[in-house]
Image 1 (cartoon, rainbow, N blue to C red):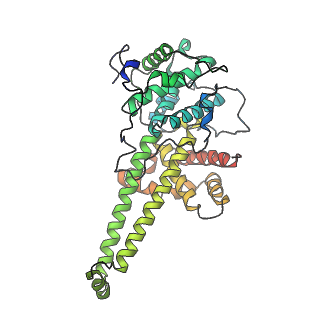
Image 2 (cartoon, rainbow, N blue to C red):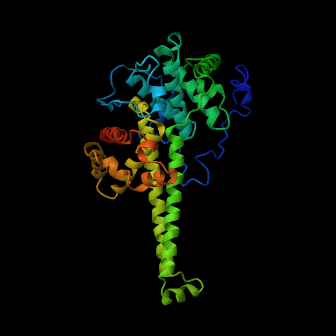
Length: 377
């Protein structure tokens, strides 16, 4: 896709000025739920055109989760630890969180996929860590960097391109004038690609959410099939006669269909909650210390707890998340059931190989959820 510096970033390639919406990996019929960028934690899209103000002070009274004491895995070490053994360069926490929230709003306004948003944030983090000292943008250019990351991720994931003007119009000054011009965005895209060795894509938590969801659905289908075989072995003569009458489903068939529908609906709820938790995790750089596979699995595990508590009073969901923080065995229990167990069986890998650092990651995610749930709506 990225053939030459002067060709792939041109506005002339956008024939009709709009983004086509192909099915894409999240819209595939094989997936039980299309997970789109949802802005579940920040639904005010009206601020897209408002100048982005970056404050060094922590927003509200946020207490972000602490970074992991050790790197989750060898692959994460490549990202999280520089060759000198020092911590990698990262944006200040409040700056990064403001940018990620704004990028999420832009993704929702443009109807982009969840994977596109994750890719854009990942490109931004990798660029900041890999860029030379003279390439790190000042505060006045951070929004341009975010736009360039969004544009690159859209080209890669969406199968089509938005015109550069559709990105430039998202960054304006107090007088309503664009802060940047199209050549500025083009130059920054090339700068990012060079810093990343022209390899912008890396699997993200959104990609693993897709795979884990497929594993969970396959496990549910296998379980339903096994239940159907067992029911057939103990079928009574009365039930068999009822099945023989046209248009009259047997009690066993009705019960099986109801159970399948209930399981399907629950999996949809878990997938939706996992997508929301994954979006929330993007805001905190502490999760850069974990593999994307670990973050995604922690999202599914905590989502199952929250969905299980959804039928209780509203405070029950927060209580379930709080338990995941306070109880060290919570992650171990989660690993033995539900989506986590399904994924482990499907991959044939133990949890520590599939998702290194799963326990502290789930605890940090629960902490983020509790803080977000406590904020006034």
